[in-house]
Every structure is written in C-alpha cells, then in structure tokens.
Image (cartoon, rainbow, N blue to C red; front, side, top):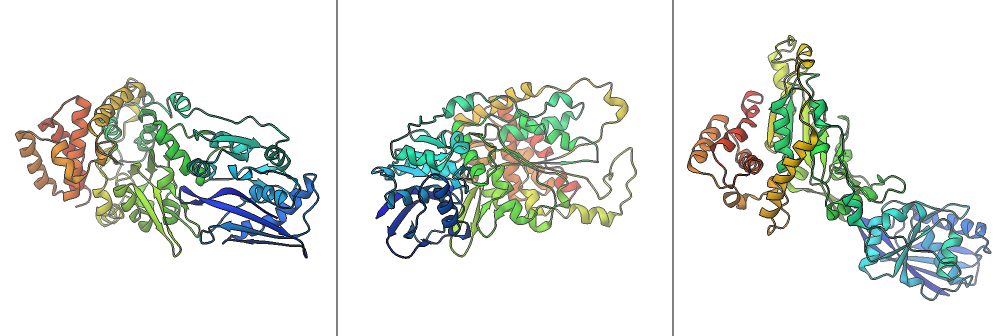
Length: 511
C-alpha cells in the first residue's frame, strides 16, 4: 500500500517542498530510504521502527521503501522521522487517514516515541503555507516558532501516538496561533543604557549619526577608553524591528538553530560579537552543508568586531561582499545558497600593538614600523567601506567623578527614530533602500543635493584627505544623515564639514 505526506528541505534560509512517499509490500523485512538522504536521514529507519513499537503499535515487518522527492535535492537532518513514521503507519494499514496529504509534518523521534525539537521549522512552515497545506504538525517545542506564520494552522504534538491519533481523527488538538504584529509591538528597550557613559561626547555623536543612517563605524583608542562599552550600548538606540524584519531575522536564526526553546520570534535587532579567532567560514558562513555565519546572524542588527587587527586577514577580507552587497553567496558543487547579511558593522581597535600611541598619559613602547604594520593589518578596501572612523581618547579617572551622567538612550533613540522616519518616507518608492547607507550611487545626486558652499567644501576635503571614489560617496551619505538629524531638506556646508571629519583617520592613521 502507498501513502504520501509532505515536509520540507532547508536550502539556505529558504525551504523546498519534500514529498514523502512510503510503500509497504509483503516480502522479507527491509527498510530502504531513497531520494538523496544524508546519514541522519538514513538512520531514521532505526528510530522510526523502534518508536513505532514503543508507541503501542505492532512493529513493521514488511518490505518498506521510502522515497523523498525531488530526488535531486539533498535531505538533511532528523526532521523526516515524524512524517516517515506517520506515513508508514498509514501504508501498513495500522491507521486510516485519507487526508494526510493536507498536512505538513516535521519532527525528530526519540526511541520512546517522543517528538523532539528540530531546527529550521519556520522556513518549512512558510513553505507549507505557500503550497496551500491546511496545517502543519510540529514538535511541541517548535510550536511557538511556527505559529507566527499567518494562514497556517499549527498543531503541536509531544509524541508519535498524539500525532497519529490526531491525523486519524481520534484526538482533537487545538491549533496554535501567534499574532506577529502584537509580538513585535511589545518590544521594549534593549541593552545597557548610554546614561552610564561619562564623557566621550564626540564618540556618542558619531554613534548617533551611524545608527541614524545605518552606517558602519570604526572606533580607535587606547585600552580602557570605553570603545567596547559604547558599542554594547548601541542596541539601546536602534530602531525597533518591523514585523517583516522580525520574521526575516527569525528565519535565519531558526535555520542556524539559534532560537531558544519555546521562543517564537526574534524581537530585538541582533548584536553579534564574535571572538577574533573566528574563521572565515564562521564569519561568512558555509561548511559542507552551508549554514549561516556571523554576518547573517547579525542581519538587520549589529556585527561588532573588537580588536579588529587581531582578526585573521582572510577573515576580514571576506567581509567585503556582505558589507557592500547586503548578502552572501555560498557556492558549492551541487548548488549555491544565498544568505542575507545587511548589518551595521561596528569595529574597535587600538592605535598600536601596546595600545598607547598618541595617548597623553602613557608612553608608547612600539616602533614606527610596528605601529605601521599593526594598522595595516586592516586593508584599505575594507576601511573604504567603513563610513565613520573616529578616535576615542581615554578619560582621566580623576575627571570621571566630576562628569555628569550621560544622555539616556531614550533621548538619543527618539532623534534616531525621527531621522529614520524621514528616510522611510524618502525611500518609499525605492525597493531595497531602507536607510541612507543603502543609497545607490546612481541616486546620490538626487538624494544628497548640495548647495554651492557645500560642494566647494567637499571638493577641498576630497583633495586634502585623498579620498577614494567609494569613500567620497560615503561622505555624501553621512552628510545626508547629519542633515536628517537636523531636520534639513538640503545638505549644507555644516553637514559636509562634520561628515568629512569622520574620515580624518584615512590620512592620519593609514598613510
């Protein structure tokens, strides 16, 4: 007898429909799985057979063939255990379920028959909705995650017996639904507050500009000057995720297995801070079966690289494409996977190996050659892609007690949100452009209109700072953001002057 049900195969951050056909015939006991399965899928026959026996059913002792179609798409992981077991019970006549094909199924089986959590359930649920399934049967621990998909009934099960009784009509399970918009609306402030930061007014201003326009930022300063402290407070002034962005981010984290148990949605913009020993694969993504890396896990959020020159050179160089294009393409012999990676890059570094070059209170022990070699671990092309480069000097301990508390994050965030709203209206008819950092080169002249004085100043700055064409474009984008923070329609000389100061390290540090 032949039975059929549906599940999905992960392909990057998307899912493809998998049709699971199970045929049972008389003959010597045999269990064969075809359709390009990996080792975990091949081992499903042992988990499924034992789970069926431990769920109160007679063990299957017939010739069983399982086909996972399409046969040219690789099937990975244990998520096919539940659909194979359910379809097998139908194929062997142990249960009757004429409408099994109306459901999507996914879940790993324990030998006891318990249904365990699997990764990537959100993309699979989205695919089941796309192909018009009535509902989806998922592990109890995955239910909240899958339930954010509107228009698809999600039925949580704890055991194989529950799943079988439900599809056979012997058990009623209430579908789980989650209102995506309501969840996103309940977002609150994230991270530590900028009121903890005393001094560093110039750095705080640069961070406000960077966040308001979605620009990349590099902070250079001695140890203890507060670079990491400042970076870790950036999430507290980021705009909240929109429902579409929250779903987009959650899908990536679901595929990577980064969602916490019973967590339905990523409600805050990601903040990723990988250690400097991270490999290019760990940063960019990939592997034998491509998985998202840190740049994709930071999508719509912040990627913080502390001690930038300590990162491997090959790891830093792979950042060029995601920083510029907003996505990563991982090519393998069989196929190529595309992972989104539109993030705000925030980096911090010391000015020299000992950390005290240019510091007024500590003597630098490094030779000029050591300083030069240390700074040049960061390549020019990568620096070109960093819009704001600022110095963060140390604040003497004696002054710390005299300084008032810093401006709270709520006040800074209010200004950021006003600037972002201006940009949202400006780019409403420009698909793929969400903030000033995304402005395409062909649109710069229209979006960043300069008056005569600003044009003259920018030409002078271009010659003095010896900026590349890419750096020139980024000065224009930053100037546009500064104008938005000021509520100005046109970009004037004052805005260009401030924006050009954020490129001053191009000359003083790397020439």
